[in-house]
Length: 387
Image (cartoon, rainbow, N blue to C red; front, side, top):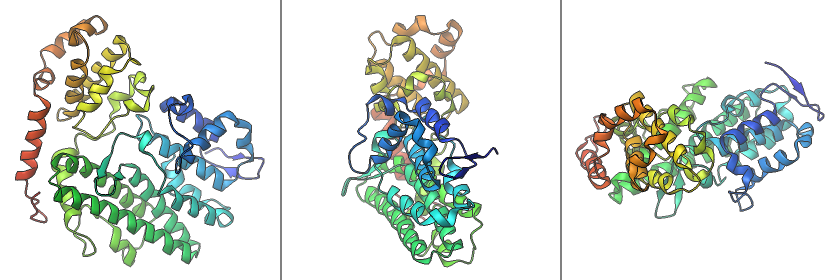
């Protein structure tokens, strides 16, 4: 990996910060076009990227902690987009093992702690809410947990005992937050939002587990035992709802919430944060947004429909694309016929005679009721819990 020495004397081995900003602009151009609120409390990380985009020469003066902060801001901004920035290993481990880490570790740890409260609601549609306190859950918590556990391991390694303990408390607080949300959704009998939350929790605790393994944490460490495999193994510190949720995700949601590779092709989806993909399979509202939007012309809407169909063919149980398709064409005067001239003839013929089109006839009410009934009937083989 090439190394770059900045004016500050810091030697970087990761992606150059100016290139990183280009990657952010590629996948989230709306950040630099005034669409987002970057000035409100806990949105300052968004403004940081806007500042450096306007003042590229300032990047030559940053130190390791500021580079870490930029990487964090870039990843938070893009984690909900179609092409997230590839700095995961940097913020989880590499920068914590930098040769000058002793000089910057305290500041980097405090940035990590502060990022737990960063407001990411504008830059992702993969969300579930606890209506009691309006706390939001997304895959961003998994990103945070993966950085926080890396920070914890680095702090322990560098004998920063007090900061390590503080980081551990925040990690436990995040786990408690997710546990509380799941229990609340079950108490509310909110089947659909529980099914939205399940893949989010599975993703988040999966990220946590991967970085614990990456740092080779001691399996006999009490903290390790308290937080490892929470969606897979019963743990006396937590309600069995966590394992139940992991099983629900595997049964109902895992095939819906993959990398959405087909959706990277229609670059028009990057025009607005409103077009970011939600949790599958409940994508009807997203489809209505796309169909209604005057930011997308008919050719672009046809391209999106092609991507829906391709995504379904790649993963034939990814019903979310069908839901989005049905809702989208319902908003277009003339429906699919209005877009036919923009679709290849062979693709159009295949689409019209496909299982995809047949399943698109199912109403939202019927589709969601099917999931309510299936979840109600499901018995977790590990915990015996029913919803």
